[in-house]
Image 1 (cartoon, helix red, strand yellow):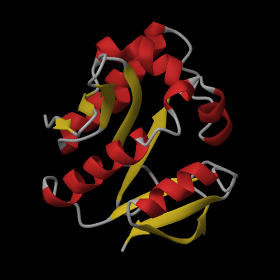
Image 2 (tube, helix red, strand yellow):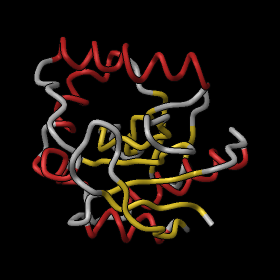
Image 3 (tube, helix red, strand yellow):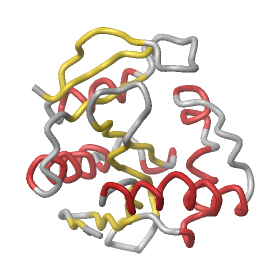
Length: 168
């Protein structure tokens, strides 16, 4: 499985040792507001989520979610990955960071290297993204890495419309 380095970050495939960290990320106020409650509330829930969703996609496609680690101190600061999401044609690029690491350019750094890997390493034909209409920071980051808004969609099993982006 691929690993990536940037000037300030190290991105490695997520594994079950990241369960407690993933619980923290998935229960931040912005995750709950913009992505939704996935009922991942304990380390056991985190292990199950990683096993069922992340590791199974790695086995199937060779890519999934990466844990973003700051080189300077080894702190796990966020997640960034490529997701095979039901209802989307193409692979979805997504990211989330702990609040104390937002606004420092880490999202751009991580999303840029993952986008480049999607194109050059994984040879993906179509890279897409979705985000809440209220999540302006996510919209700006998607546009900064080259994705363009194409409209809005409602994913299967959901009721809320989300903005839809494609790499052009």
